[in-house]
Image (cartoon, rainbow, N blue to C red; front, side):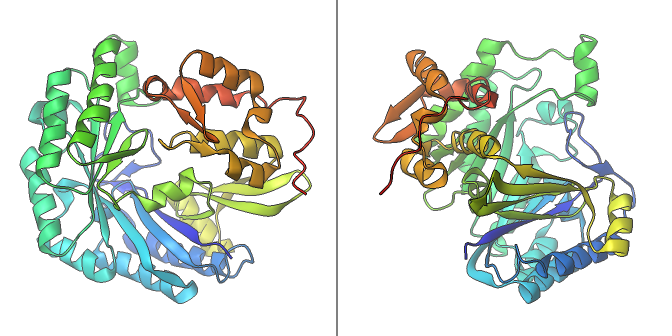
Length: 402
């Protein structure tokens, strides 16, 4: 029986950033006790179901929102519940997202004692001016203090999130950001390009011409800087936006990219479970909880769960997700894995698309591995969008494995 990952969504923030389109809610006061109780109830319900019962938990991730605004005892109660309901690997990676402005040495010590062993700090920038543009409430000094406090209380796995392509940012400033992160000797760095999402204040400002983004060539230069500079500083480039010291890759995120089963708990949380072997055209199930926290709490109190929708993965869906997720890894996807899942070779699924992308120098197919080229990594979203197309309607006969 394969292991699973558990994601816990804490949707509350003290302040919502103008670029954020996640399922988050900025509240001066929030129902921590009621929400924690709902999470515990949903865990109790899910643990009784056949698809989850008895499966070893390999990673746990508290995301948001800002999980670090919850009291450590609430986090501890959730972890204790998971340990009671599921076998948890003694090597489990247990991560929590934190805002530098909401943590101190005392809280971090309590979180470490509760069982959190990986801290993901939402730094976003070391520039006071750019932090203001991004609507962040912390200072560069608080980022450094957060990392030092984390080390002081025993965190041996610390990650920083950074954003590039920010209005007013230059490639030179971005290079300085990367250097500042490396100077703190963190173990993992996520470097995300700013995206303007519909429904956000940034989107409204952009449409009115009030938000001036860096030129496209400057943004490409920033991405190239991350891809070249961070490996030189000791960080392996293992996923499009992620870099890690050897052995510190984010195992929870790798579970997503590898197509593993994961259980999402909390308002708006998503879950996925494979159907192996497939049952007809059913290759798996995915579902999402109701997004509004109050609706989530009410549904769980009445039914033990709060599913808002559920969908079945067809073979075509599963093939698309194999490429959509797997091509985010720098190593790409393996023909052997694809053949084991679908009894097909990779080039039998999207023969024309793959040949076209190879001719354009965007992907490479060597030794049974299909991966993005250096050029393809810079255009990753556009390249991967090609796989939204329905897999070949005239697939050859399945490979005979006898």
